[in-house]
Image (cartoon, one colour):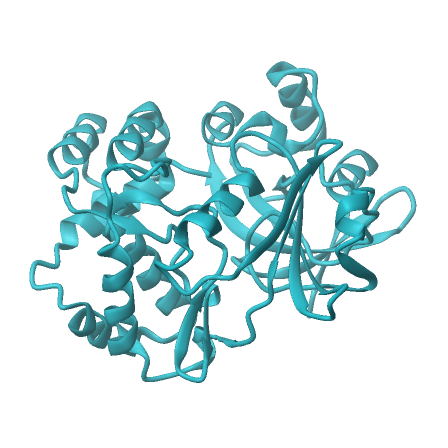
Length: 354
C-alpha cells in the first residue's frame, strides 16, 4: 500500500513546481529505493505522487550539504537559512535524505518552436526511469512517436549534455535520433526519437549478449573525446574532497578502515582501463526490439574506467533479482582480468556523488 506522507506547504510547493529534488524525511519512515509515495500538503490536503530514487542517512546537515548542493532542497537564502529551517521542522540526530521524482505533473510549454514540432494534445507522461527531469511521450506533426524531456536548468546537470552526446554517439551505438533542443526561459526541452522496445529487466538469458554489447561500447574509446565529466581523475578528485563523508558512509568491507586507509585505498587502486562508458548502464536504460539493443538516458556518457558501467550493471541485476545473469555477462565481455578491488573502488566513488 502506498505511503501517504504529510508535507508542509513550503516544501510541497517547491516539489510541485520543480524547485526541489531532494527531501529530508522523518526517521520513522522506512522508505526504500524506488518506493512510490504520496505527499500531502498540510494546508490544502492536495496530493502529489513521488518516487524515491535514492535513500541515504547522514549524521549532520553539514555532511548532507557536503554531498548535495543546497539548490536541490528548494529556495533558501543560504546554507544557514536552510539549516535553521530544518532545525525548526525536524528533530533528529540522524537525517534521512531521499532524492525524489514526481510521477504526475501538469506542464505548460511556452516554447513556440517546440509547439510547432509536436501535437501537444498527445502528450503523456512516462513514469519509467530515474532521471530528475520530466519525461513525456508525444506525437510529432508528422505523426511519429517521440520522447520529450523537460527540466528546469540547474547546476551542471543539463539536457544539453544529453543532446550533444546523442549527436556524438550516432553511428557508434544504437541510440535515438535527436530532433530538437532549446533552453527557453530557464527551462530545457529535448525532443528525440521514441525507441520501441522492452526494458531489458523484463528479459532473461541475456547475460552473455549484454557482455558482448558493453565491450563494443567500451571499445569506442578515444582519448580526445570531449566528454570527460566522469574521468578517473575527476572521480578521484571528487572522492578526496568528500573523504569525511565517505568515512561516515563506508560499507561493511571498509568498516575497519581509518580515514587515511580510505585515502590510500583510493589513490593506490585508481583504475587504468579507460573506456567510453554509458554512465548509467542499468537494465531500465537498455531496450530490446527484435533482439537488438538500444540505449537511452545518455546524459552521463564519458571517458572513464570500464568498471563504472560494470559496477552499475551489477547493482541493477541485484535490484531486478537477475543475479544469475552475472557470470554469463562476464563470459560475454571476456574479462580475463576482472578485478574485485576496482568494484570496491567504485563503491566509494558512488558514495561521493549525490
